[in-house]
Image (cartoon, rainbow, N blue to C red; front, side, top):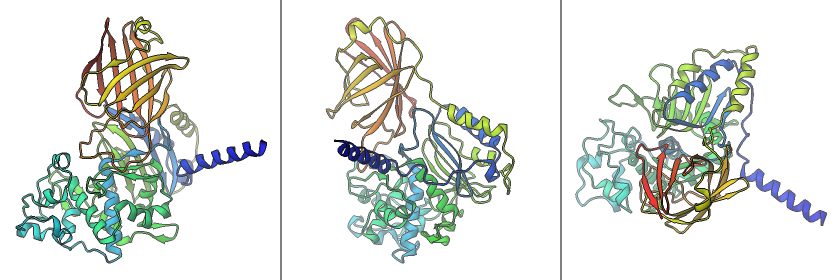
Length: 495
């Protein structure tokens, strides 16, 4: 019996190590040991957390290849993956570089030559002239059309059928440029971008907890959809900082990394753009950049990498280099009270739970009752609440028939895993295709009046958060939802 218990315990520990093996792999140090004042990191964190309409999910600061500070505000954790939006583009650029290094591709290759089956009957001179380089610098000559991926189950053919102005001249940011790059890599390698990166880069970086959305036609979406842990982002940033080298092995050529971080085109608004990366105009820093503020900031002059995942409607990416660049030193500096204050700050970050009372007057008549909901953008069909020793269970059934019994805590966060998909600002055919595993929802609640219940739902391994208010009437409930990722406030009801 003892032997069986030991085997079970050993297997459980092994599972936990495999599941979360990618956290705490990078070496750790202290800020002062690497020449960074702790008060500067405190200032950076204060700046990031004070930006209006911003939910910070993780911050990791590295210098000389070592993590010197990191924070995951409760209920977020280091092991949670995060959807990265356009931060994904930088990884596609790396895959293109790998194909170029392997002589499978040249940046001067014509795009049309890769997709003969998807070309229109008449190919214009402009379409014929479009090159891989033009896609890399967001100058395809095609007018961006976000609705294309929303209404079509095949994207390449309608995309290539669009009018093309002179390519290579005018910067027009378009995620479908990156999608075409992803399709080209798949054509020349016989592997998806994700498979190719797993083989050529991720294996050496020990990035194995990774997914990426697929288009309906089976191509990695490229311009969005990568799903990674923060430490994996830091590894990629460090690889770029080290000019493509990792543990003495050249994974990506130094020449390609240089091209990624070189300004190739005038964006028209004073910013600089390389190969699927943004450059700072003054301090030599560059970044991978995703919607709502997903960043890998690489600072070669200071030998630093900073990773941020968040949901911000007013992000400020260059606050990182502005705060840190002027104060770093070439040698270790003395540690003191500032370091102790920083450690306390890092441990204290947490999202406030919902204010209010543990019970409301309405609980007696609504406990366990299932409300059938009117049409709503979340696909919720029914909802019920049931008190328990930890707080309450919020049961939601969606339009796919998946029931999520979410534990909500009073004055604490409780996390539940569910197969139901989280809310997502991206509208594309078959979104979530390719994303593996369940999703984690941290919840807290409070009764703000006798008949009004407020529940906060943080989708901690995605990006979304919902602040849900339930106002109970005699036989019905009115529901209002505030989202952290869009300004509209859905309202619907249940009976």
